Image (tube, rainbow, N blue to C red; front, side, top):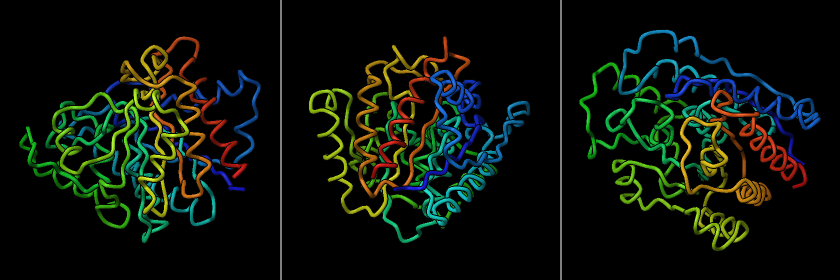
Length: 315
């Protein structure tokens, strides 16, 4: 039986739409509405964030508030590392997806010799860099940061020296850059990405499982396929962005996209992954209750969280 620790990161400085910092509390409210005492069962820790920067001018337009993201990375990576070092399984509840790079850094700090696999369940690739970003929002860059990737070949901006320095600092958090190999990433339900990200996916041959493939062969077969593909990895991190769900149900998130997963498909798939002993960390991100009606997105996220943790506890 695994010892679970909840790590809360209510940061939204990496997002372009306001409100994701409220997502964790919205999930807790959903638990209360279902009369669940889930959140009193496990030790929890709240990571210090930098949301005050939302009220300050942006000085790095191609990497907005990156100096704050660096601090969140440092704080979160230490929390994840400490949890794993003390034999806890970290379940990360985060506001925006930029913090996932800090989660990856923390796993590598705790297990520097680990060959880490990443299952990225998300409508978006999050492979942008300050050189390619169309928005400057850092929640589109965590995988590129973990890969130590600049994607200079596809650059569309001339980035100032200050941003370059900060980007290099971000990439280096947690036992240096290149914490991850592209061959050890699997995208699931990826369907909304730019040509710059597509170039990296094709360059490295990154594995992509579409929504239609999952629907065709089923969650169990997809989980087997993915785990077989990542069989050389010693540890695997599962990152679940709620915008992987179809836009008909994922209204309470900043970047909904059509042709996504149904709630039951996501729940079944993640539960299958959680049965595997190599899974070392799970993250849920991008719930934004300010965009939602009746807290539906948070309720769905809570169902997935609760079932996933229950499966973890049984294995």
